[in-house]
Length: 422
Image 1 (cartoon, helix red, strand yellow):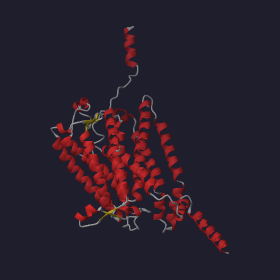
Image 2 (image 1 turned 30 degrees about the vertical axis):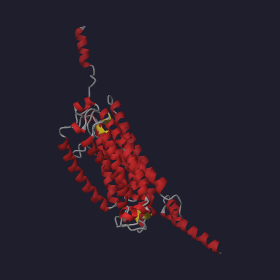
Image 3 (image 1 turned 90 degrees about the vertical axis):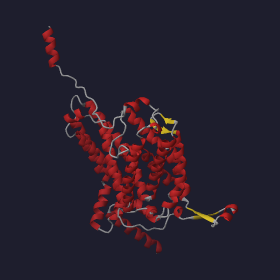
Image 4 (image 1 turned 180 degrees about the vertical axis):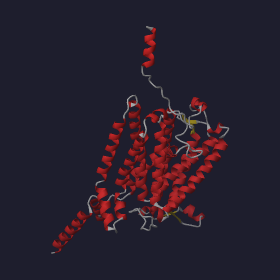
């Protein structure tokens, strides 16, 4: 009987035990246990980490400045590259090396869904800019018009192809892992492309609406770091043990002051304030929006007597900048707190190690995601004009018509105009 039982145990399929791949960015045990009592001011390695962080920040600042100088199209390309890095970091978060070896090419499915989502999102956002770019070439114009017209169908069948690929790749004993990866991939696409869609829309409204809010987040982050570095004593939130009330309040005040002054500096450059209507890279010139035209405010008598000038110039966008500065100081940091809680749930210190001293790209973009959505909604609600011009209406109509249909529409409009004149 015992021999039969041993034979049964040897021949029965063993359930494999899998564990997450060990990562270099796992959270240190002492920080994990402290859960809020580990302050930056008490860190004995804080000066070393500060210099590493500073050097990385300078390199990032120089690179981003060059890309912004090159223009809208290059900034969009930068956003796409950041998206790819973020997706890679998030895909790897739940990757298990043992399962992946037994599921060849399964990771390619994640990237298939990623690039399908990219084609759908950017095809919808930049369709009009793409049409405006190729209007001079009749063949390209017709080709692009047809691609835009059937873009949703193309993306749908690309997604269905990925769905069928996923079903055919299912393997026994790996169902739970594969369906978990499928759900995780879709959540990543929602997180990454939601914020990036609003970011790209802001870029083509004018580089100002991308650069200014992104700068506010960076200023707030730097301010919180330095105020916490020198004065931080009171823990702010347990999810992020190095955050302090001193850093939070000090950064908020500094960000509000910087928002008002920096908006005036950026608002004086047409290259930053003009919207881009196509995908070209030429230098932009336009009639500035009224919010970028200075208004002169007379100074009170007591102040004007002691100063050489009687009035000060203020751009209307500076008053909008105060609201954006307030959001960047008070609400946007909660995107970072959310990311901190997410990392603690997975027991990792950072999402990646692509940027020395900062972690991964996802670590740098946590607050930017929240900010980009707010700026787009704020701009459309309180800044962008609500009146619909003839040109705007025609653009909306032409966007959904092919070249032949557009010619027919122009011909019909011409006939109607002649009949009215008669």
